[in-house]
Length: 117
Length: 113
Image (cartoon, rainbow over all chains, first blue to last red; front, top):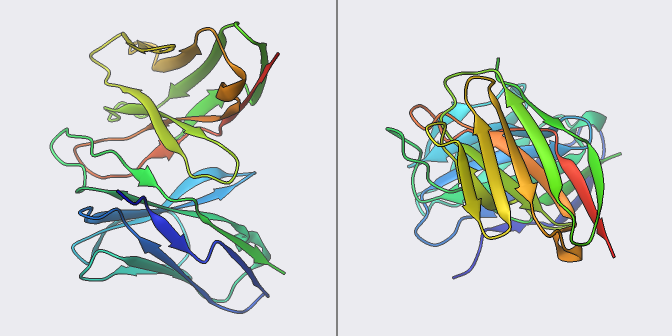
């Protein structure tokens, strides 16, 4: 079974530009979450999607947005890039969202390394 | 109240030794505590997890100890091997409300020969 795939793996942008990152979940997984990983802040939750709806959002500015398609694939977009947006962006998929005390394991992709110059 | 504090930041252990990583949380609504292992160039992968109604869980060489009253939990790696060299993250989540993992800051473990 193929794992979570993320494209592109590496990306270099300049300040002010926008960027779109893509995530294909494991086949059959319908929930997708995004995390930002930086040396200073560690792993921070960005948002979670299920059935094309954003279920939960972390504490990030509105420049960070995402969406999910009917095939469960997800994209995240960062507009007006800042130097501080340089990070590894990780996508994780699970069968379904956690609910009623059941943990659905999140499987992480390898990430997209974004560098903002 | 959403923080998970993790220590130490880095750890060097000799082969065959015991590696111990500690975490503490504040939010009493957390009800699931997974540990993730991350190798360079890879995403985190679930290693072992525990719920607060259990004080200890063991899977092979990996053991989680959980102290609910102190709001602390720890990962013990017995007989540490060079292949265990990685970054370890503790995490916590509330499975009743959201699929949102709150991570600790990570511990870089190096197991020497």
